[in-house]
Picture 1 (cartoon, each protein chain N blue to C red):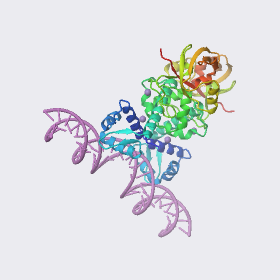
Picture 2: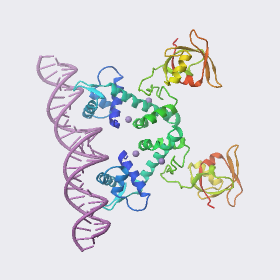
Picture 3: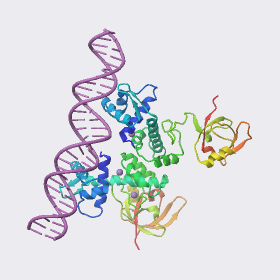
Picture 4: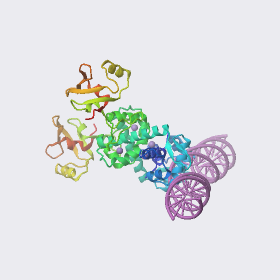
Length: 221
Length: 221
DNA sequence: TAAAAATTTTAGACAAAGCTAAATCTTTCA
DNA sequence: TGAAAGATTTAGCTTTGTCTAAAATTTTTA
Ligand SMILES: [Mn+2]
Ligand SMILES: [Mn+2]
Ligand SMILES: [Mn+2]
Ligand SMILES: [Mn+2]
């Protein structure tokens, strides 16, 4: 369990790290978080003791694997809440950040994952940022749910959301796996099922339930 | 702005006060909040300095008007979040409290009131507790929205939810105000409007929109 | 390459919130 | 009514997180 402040530091270090591969400096974090370098040093030493950052005096610091995971799960919460505020509570684009900055610290895995489900497992927040998944993985920029692929387009499976053995068995039966090429032949609005073609197989129909659990990358061109 | 801990103390004092009119004791709060009497004394002195409680050494304490208002607004948040979790995130009755205990500390009047609207201005939380309104007033136990009054029953207006001048003007035009007696004559499921009678006036029809903004107490007997 | 500038760390304070142990006040009851 | 018991407060300490000022280190630059 991390405190509110620790979580904000982890997030700050993560965000600053995205600018490049260099170690993060005390000064950068102080500016980012609106505090003083001496306060940052203090906190970094605590995070280092908890093995959340690698730190060498005067040499800057980086997140450990554990630290990065924690940062991504906080970012996940932040972005899910932002989307909730915009989609369901009529917040505007610009009003959400401040509130999400607080909501992200509410600690309850059940809550986060229920919220994710309620929002229908979104991939991007209202600012277009990718929402890390339940394991803290950043899904690819261009990964979308199969239901969003337009007719006649071809795409490749990048992520299988439902990892139950039932679903994986089903996918085996219809010859779909990671990286499988899928072409949308026709869609049936009535039950939101779609007819698709997989190379060297005959056409099959996928139910809405199946489509919602398949994430894909569109074939470029 | 109060801290997380201060808010929990205010809530605890409020809840304990509901048991009776006596001043609250250090020991009671310590037990309620799961801490020690010495910690409570410490906090009570801080709350006293902030004029949120009236305190005389060794004599117990009570919430000031300001303290009570703050307590009720936190309770409002707590109960609205509980209802949200149960109604929209499939939490059970028993899972909500712990999470609401955290969510209640998120500070954003906009958020609370949007959540209230999203939930359709509920009067009770999943545990049947009354949700204080936007001003921290506890609506009467027996106050219900006009749409819920059965046919042929008589009731009295106890709360006017929409306080816009447009609505108040409308109410003037149809001779409805606080405490007005309203008898339901007939309801039209088609558009959810109802025909009602106000003493010494001719019958009028109220639209669903109007009914949803009028809260009433049923005439007993 | 050595002094100046910039950055980082340490030292020392402070506020919030908790604790234990000791002191003080109130209540009970013999 | 005056101990004893019980409740409350104070004193002193701890942790988290912040700050300023001073010391230490690194980087820049002349
Ligand atoms: Mn935050
Ligand atoms: Mn965002
Ligand atoms: Mn709480
Ligand atoms: Mn409740």
